[in-house]
Each structure stands twice: as C-alpha cells, then as structure tokens.
Image: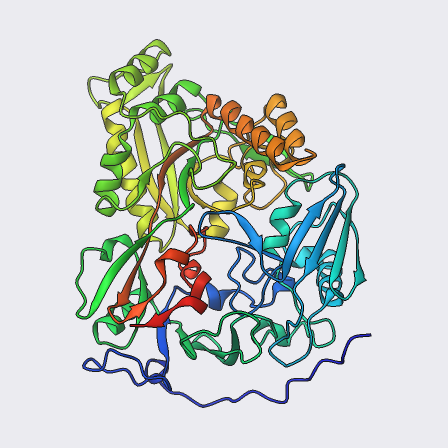
Length: 535
C-alpha cells in the first residue's frame, strides 16, 4: 500500500477587484520581478473547461500541472514523461509501461503505478464525462509493481498509444471530483495556488517537480475579452497575449510577434447528400443534405479552383499555410497531392456538369437550381468569419455564390447536416479522421461526420487502421483513408493556421521546445512553460 496522500489544507484566496493588477507590471517596468512572475493571456477556454484530467482537462497534452505517461516533443514524436519506457506485445493487446521513480505529486505524496490504475479505471467508469479520451477498448489495467503498469485491450486499437499521451495522471488517494475542477494535484512543474473564477489562475512552482526546476516561479493566467487583453498588453500589463490575425500588424512597445507552427487546420464541411429526411440516433426524422453541395462537381471545383494563398492573404494578411488536407507535421497525414487555383479547369468541370453561368446574375444555375449555399462560422470568431468571407469572394470567380452567416455552436449543431460549416481541427491522434469520415457516426449527435459521408471502402480502411498490430501499418492505413476520402471532396481544406502571440521582449518562451500546436484556442503555447525564462 502506498503512502496516504496529504490533504489540501487550504487555498490562499486574496480578494482582488481588478485582476490585471496582480503582478504590478507597469508600462515602464517590462521585466517581471521574481516575486511577481509573469502575467499572460491565452484565450478564455482554460476558464471555460475543467482543469481535471479525469473529465478531459488538458487532454491535448499540456503537462504543466499534471503529466501523462507519454508526451509529444517538438518533432511531433512520443517520448516518455511519467513513463521512462514502454513496449507493446506482438498481438497489440498488451501495453507495458515502466514508470520513472522518485516522482512526487505537488502535495508531497509519492507517485506510483496505483495512481495510473486509478486514473484509467476512473475515466473508464465515467467515460461520458471525458469525450476527449476513448477507453472503449481498454479491458483492464493493473499495477505489476510500484513502477510497472500493464494495460490489456479487448482488441487491437492502435490509437491507444495516443491516449497515453493525452490522459494525465491524478493521485489515487487525494482525488476529489469537485476540487480538481479548479485545484488539481499533479506532478507537473507548476501547481494551482489560486483560482478566481472567470478572472485569473495563479500558478506557483511545484517544489516537488521531478524535472528541471522552472526559472519562472509564478505565472498568472488572466481571463478577459480579446480587445481588453490587447489593450492590457499595450499598457504594459501582460507579458504574453494571444491575438487574432487581425491584430498581427499592430505594434506593441517592448513586445514582438511570434507566429507559431500548428497542426490546427480550417476546413469547410460540404454536405454530400441531396435534401431528404433521415432518422437520427434518437429515432427522430431530421432534414439532411444540400442540393448544391451534394453535386461532387461543385465540391471538386471549389477544391481545385480556389486560390488558397490569396484567401489567406485577404483574410489574415498571409498568416497561415495553404492546406488541402491535414498538416505534414503529423506522421499519419496524407499531404502528397496539392491542387489549387486551377480556375479554368474548375469552370469546365462545372460547365460539363450542367452548371451554366447566368448572364443576369453571374451565378451558375442547373435545372432551375442556383449554385448558391450558406456557409456558417461560429459567432464571435472573427478569424473564421474573415476566412469564410475571403472564400466566398474567391468562389465568385467560379460562378458559385456563397452566403456567409454566423450562428452559435448550439445553432450550428442543428444546421451542420444541411449547410456548409467552417471547422477547426488539430490533434495528434488520427481518430479525428473517424470523426470526419466514418459513416455510422452520421446523425449520432455532436459534430461527427457532419457532411453525411458514406463510403464502405473508407469505413473498412478506418477499421483496418484502428485494429492494426503495429503503428507503421496503422499510419499507412490512415493515409489511405485520406486518399480515398479526398476523391469525394467532402471537406474543403483551406489553411493550416499559425497561432499568434505578442511576447515581452524580455521573455523567452523557448521556441526550440514548443510543440506544433494542436487545436486549442490559444492554450497550447503553455505546453513548454517549464522551459520559459526571463532574458
């Protein structure tokens, strides 16, 4: 039996009227003091979601409060974190991890295999609370000894290795479902010293951290509106601020802009079925399909005919990389083909398919149907809206009329099976391809397969990839999934975005150890926060 965990005695709560004043940084004092640390704005999503790994907190892999068994390095490869080594059986049903010794949680208690077993068993028991980590194929997990954990799968599931880099470990004896939403106990470089709801999170150095001691002792993460955050940075009150591309040309005294590599793509789903009614997973008849985007000629013409570089230039001042699929910093992505700006070929494709340009409107028509459809962006997301507007403007050259609209995500859920929607995707696990293309996920709720795509050959390749006995074969199968699906042009991939941050000239965010950012609304920059230092 392991040592009993220490209980949290209490949390220092200081009443603060204006959270911006926490660090005392002034316009003429840009170097944060050791006592004040640094203050950063990384978007609002960290406040919108739980910090509890059991419920999906930081499951894209930001090991600064809690650590997972594995982590992703700057080359997008898996390396050990809480585990120093691992092996997979020949039948891919048994995963064995050798754990690092002498690791402690921030409360001073020892980390060992029991914590890993508890974390995985708790998530499996409460799978509905953690949609980011799928333990469906996990049959059992047990501690061979204090330093060894063995997982048994019910059937081969190649993405399980991805899971072990996503699910961070909590202490078995000190875990509390309510407390960990804001005050998790972990093994990372930092611990939560103070959490002021919707205002700020103050992180202090974890004296028990098993890795290299962070040089910055205190980090304050603030919550505010993007415009207010930018103003605070200009006033000298922030050391790092996430900004949209619409701010990238601005200048801030004593700060510089960093455009960081991501695997975060923007794509437009194009419903592939004609308008009809189908039964959803709840047995209700719902409207699906779109009589314009259901024509593959329209979908292909958009994919090969638009000018992605021009679209990126017009929507985000050229910040981002043109994309026709997922990005090449993912080992499983298929990036072999690139067709773009073939305007005449796209026009001929539409002509041959019967879509003729109206002399009165300049919009194509076919059998009385205008080549026009609605494209939805999430309300309040300026970057996505601007991107949609640029796509619509570019599509006019092809005689395609796209009407850009905005809606809340709750509204988009009701529209996604009949209208085009711009999405953001980006993660290390290739299971995102199942979400996009697997036929039996259509009309099952959530955002899966919103285009209504169905291709038995693609479904078979997805299953082949998931059940593969080794990672190399799985990767090849995932690439085949994309090569098959891209022939049907179900999604119009536009750009692999770059995440933009203004950074204090005296702050080094260690670009060498930054990972290619997954989709995380600004948060991924803190993936390597333990390596940050003041110059």
